[in-house]
Image (cartoon, rainbow, N blue to C red; front, side, top):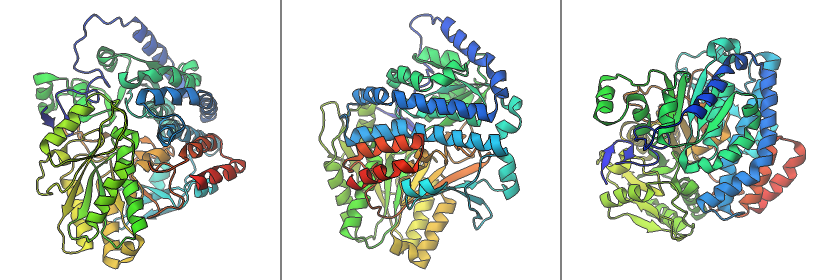
Length: 590
């Protein structure tokens, strides 16, 4: 197998092609009758959707929440069967959380925002609103109320706005689709992801309720088994005529992207998927890209993956802290068997950190104790083989079913080898590399790691910084960490918290750092999530405790997490004080 370019391993993979349906030859003529009927029905509803007020849309989302609750167990069972997860286990809890829970939370947050719009014209901003050192606005969105302080204890989240956004323009730009609905009306095609079950439905919510579009969602063949369950959960939107969900392979995606009544396209996949859709495939596609002559002349938004870094700020950690952070980083890798655009891909350490070997030992020991997962995503073995071929020193850990791949760690990748596959290609499997930077001090290391992430690693979707309280209190180190938060060019940054939590929160934005051109798209363009409907976000920053107690239920090493997640989703669907004691008790037992 060869490396085709930054960001993808070739020659083909499901992540590159069938998620969108670009570049594949149809074996027989495609009958487009049903597709045309679906697109026509939805597009004909666009003017009416534009006239549908915020209160009525909030009522639809309430119906979606009810329908999702009714579909939850069948949805989960189907996903567990497809991915080889043990029902009721920590693995099933993970699927329940990321595959369903993040959708439920986002639907509820949007419902609440729409109720605010119906009442006051704009979604309520929890605040406070602060200015960064360079004047960028930092808007706190978590905690959003008393319940967040319980369910997301010791967690805060801010959205940093793009330069030039003022306190006045921040509010003026909010919920623009509700200020002039007719101007935002249109029909969007959502080319859904094949990995996380919630991704496609969440993208539908963003297009419908934040941007004001009606939607046709095409399922990825990897998880089109979920179409019946999505159809149940989203039935109120389907019945309203503003959504259709279709399945099919390459030809279906290709036909829909070019459909005359599709106004814009949203893609979750790889940069190769994006290039195939926007410029076409083969030599002619390459020529068009080089000349910036798009084949698809429509607005395209996209979330396209990342070589996600984890910066380990050196400090003096206790053995329990080493173990905790090893479990934290391991979770970032093994979640969804590593088939995430937010998986940890490069752990960046300080070469002079006395505890570097101890941390790496704790990480590999943790991975050795975590059951490996079914390699359900096509091309995983080939992608992993490409990394192992480039790095024969790769180490393997974990035991599991015969159709699983081992957790793979590649230690000590020289940072000066900037063209290395580990720094330039998203492996999209259970693989992580480690590199150690030389620096004269911990503060200098943080500055060097920031530059390494910005200038060497491919992608701009998310990054995590792990720093102990003692290190953060050091004047020089603390200042360097604050510089890193401000300067890292990533759409989401986690501080002592996996940046994937930014995706899960829903109220934060999720997407690439803004500024990519279509000829160098990297992690994409545009954002989803964003339930407060800001128009010019730059990045989201989430902070958590260095060591949470009890252990977060989303850790891969958490026991009893299934019951916690079951109760958490019920709480998120309709928060109430009466549900808090049972949720907290189950969390304490996990």
